[in-house]
Image: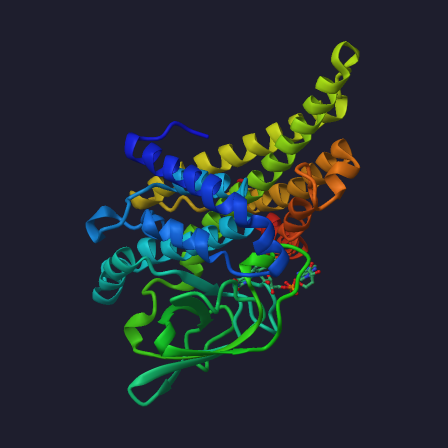
Length: 390
Ligand SMILES: Cc1cc2nc3c(=O)[nH]c(=O)nc-3n(C[C@H](O)[C@H](O)[C@H](O)COP(=O)(O)OP(=O)(O)OC[C@H]3O[C@@H](n4cnc5c(N)ncnc54)[C@H](O)[C@@H]3O)c2cc1C
């Protein structure tokens, strides 16, 4: 992780304390019961972490992407569900800060978010288009003085616990599928009708069932920028970078358990202790994963700065590279966990052992599905036909 400024170092100290004191002790129960990690999210609220990315002018923490990414990593080492909830929330906040700030509604919203530590969920996926971020069926439809959207969302993480929801929809009933907007609606402006349960293999504490969302809202709740711009410049890079940090956290904890297991075994053996090449292999995999994630994070920070100065820096080549980060990190995380299981053997396979890797492996297996890698490969293949720099 990169060096951080003093107040950001203090923020990360708080995150590590919450991870140690609240997330780690509850992670197994959250997973077993597939329940929302309320105590961890409340602990994050108490230190103002839900507004970490909100500029200080609005009362937020004014933290940068690298600091929030480091927090995702720390939380991922202790409770994947809390880490993923935190990451998903921060992605929505980044979109609002970067593309909504400057309008009266969103300026007021950011202040309220910082004061009340509001939790924001996301509904981009839709029944009928699956995880295709750049297509919607639902449309913003005028109804009297209000606008209405009805969206059949297959997976809305922490939908029942969130204060607000950032959803995507077509701009109007006659708009094309990719002519989308992002809309921020609060709990009292929408109904969430459950359309499925949530009893998944992993990431159980994210509590992500399907909902039919019906929202009624004023026009100023639409984020002013076209969703294509929001996706390209903020939502996709932030998602891939923050998710990757969560997965790195999960993989790192799996590695730490494997290393503790090997050391424990060798202590018992005394002078007959032997090195474990599989652990060294695992360390190398993790090192490669960490290096790619750090490089991609640094690249985004640089590109966003250039873009902010008025030069269009988000090229097709960049889109290919940030998609490659998602594909590589999401495939490496379960491989690292499986390799850690191989090192720990039955001690890792058991759920009641301190070397257990089961939860890590199940959680990491969600990574390639979270916007299916096949779908990303297919869109990369199209971009490769026209890319000049990737
Ligand atoms: C833990 C978790 C939490 C999530 N939380 C949220 C959330 O809060 N909000 C939200 O909006 N989404 C969320 N998602 C994402 C969402 O669930 C999925 O991206 C979306 O529902 C798509 O699911 P799908 O895999 O069934 O559909 P699809 O994306 O349609 O994929 C179905 C299958 O088709 C394949 N496929 C699709 N397109 C192509 C293609 N072009 N070429 C080749 N193969 C293709 C895929 O590989 C996959 O096997 C979450 C996902 C996970 C795992």
